[in-house]
Length: 170
Image (tube, rainbow, N blue to C red; front, side, top):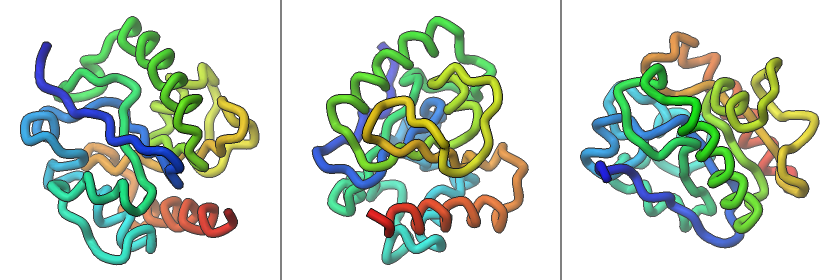
C-alpha cells in the first residue's frame, strides 16, 4: 500500500475537515495541506478558527483545538481526476462510519465536489446545508483551499468566517 495520510480523529470534535484525497506532497511528508499553494492554514487562521497560523507539520495539534481531518478517498494523487468511482464508493462507506462513530458537531467538506461525492446530491451550494447526511451533525461546505481552486482567497475566506460563526453558535 502506498503512503497516505492517517486520519486525525478524536472524541468530541468541533469540526471534522474532509478533503477529496491527500496530495502527493502531503502524503510524502505525512501532514495535511502541506503544499505551499494550499491555503488551508491561512484560511483557518484568518477566519479566527485558530489563534495563530499553524504550520502543516503541526496538524496533530489541531486535535487539541477540537479539529480533525480525513478524506473521502485515502489514496494520494496528483489531482482528483485520477480518482476512480469505486474509490469514492468505498470512501463514502468509510466516511459515514467515521462520522457516525465520532459525531463531530460540524463536518466541513472542503469543496463542493467532496460533498457531492459523499451525499450523492447533484445540486450543492457552499455554506451550511439544509439537511445533514448524518443525524445530529451539521454539514458545511467550504471552497477547496487547494491552489488549483481558482476562487479568490478573499471569497474563500468569507466561507471560513461563516464556519467560525456557525461554530460559535454551539
